[in-house]
Image (tube, rainbow, N blue to C red):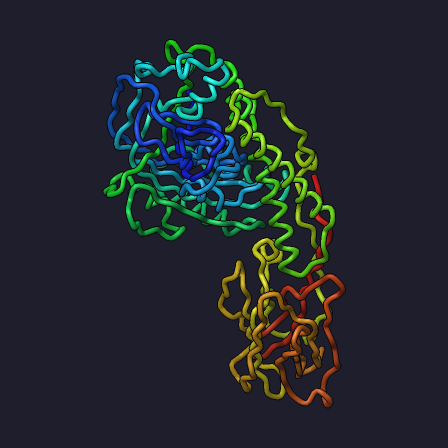
Length: 530
């Protein structure tokens, strides 16, 4: 008996498979319904029987996962070979939610999971309906043709248990880059958490908040509610409280939370289904054997990591990485090779299959490669220090300078620097006082970066400030800036990013005025592999 947990809904056209069944997959709606384990697709019903019912229950728990298979099982994603990433995958809310997590080989996921079960039905005494068995189905055909005809109409399994209710899922995903980072983070979190059933909220929520704020990696928080129509979602700091209250909420749209399937070979008078059973194991896997589904999962994670890095390089205009691009093409070819076998199986389910060579699984996992360099400081030692951009996380979250506003008189009174992170602008980082004249703001468009900053600086004495400044965008020549009489006091200075680099942000010192400013350059190199 195989626990599927949740079906994947999609529509496919398998014209060559069957004249009986137009495959538009959906979550099983009833016990004994036919099921195709390879693509996670419902079929017509071939068996019937009795069933046992169990009552309502609920549980609220949280767990940490460092591998995709365990995470998918916890979220209740189908383990079929095509679920989510195969040729017939996509369309289901839960599968889409899993895809949006964008996990990679070295991600760490903390899942808060509240489940409110209304009922579970379990099939018993399954028998084939009158006139329907694999051996008797269209018995004028040879054995292989019988199996093909039977499979295309009824699949390889039937739904043996089905659970209905509602659930709340919230996931913190820590996108660590290397095995060591993953292990260190998992060990650190485990040292402050006792995973399992949640009974109280304060300590757990505080731990989650602290972990999300302190780690040197990109962190995302996503959540999903099933069984309640038009739900109101909590803020991340209230996720535990919401999960604890979920079992008491009214489910106005209960849904199928999970289901189990059993192969037809376990039904009396099934006949010889050895070819179908062998292919199910090949595609879906078995205990200790990942199958095609496991390999597709690995390839999907590798592809996600490659695309994260390529996307970051493109975002910052970094030089191309030929090895990474070649690896991306190879991963795509390997996925296509496995998808081709899934398509072949759907057309000819009794064929024998051998695992194709998948060179990309031998490549290892890529990591983003970059270094930061502080430019020469302009100004003096007064005021308090500031640093706008936390480099460890800024690159992974694609932080960029989006706007500059300067106030100036006899010197630079203040600069207001606005940064965007993941496409969302934050509050301006204001360095200096409120005096001086407000100059025209400089909007920096997506894909643009500062090409030059011209300054006059006074490094010591009573006027050890930034005297003049001018920010320039090379793409269209726009600029903003101003300041005092630099020809009387101050030394000229120009910041220009080195080849292959951009100005990520600024650090410096400020008080009543802008005492000091210093650029932070980011330079990218080819991805590292491990």
